[in-house]
Length: 96
Image (cartoon, rainbow, N blue to C red):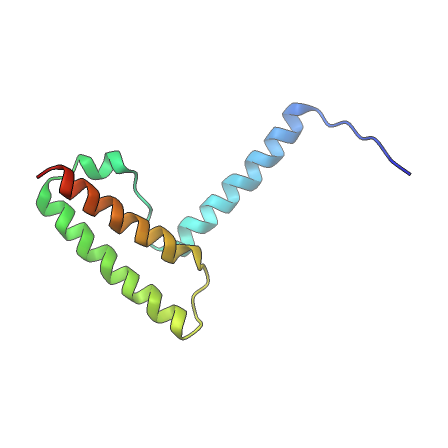
């Protein structure tokens, strides 16, 4: 038996938006370091980029340590940090 149900588009989109927003806020709290956009990195000078790269590499080391000891809560954080490192290195290479 098939039951049809109609939800208003506003109600549905508001519900989805609240779930996505809550999920995103939880991810930010778990990550520890906010993921930055490429444009924000481009606004930094070379010294700031080097410092940020070192900081993120230390964070990657900590995440890997947590992964080995099975204390890592968010496995996606490893991927995001590696992407941030690649993003910074790309911007540093572009600015040469």
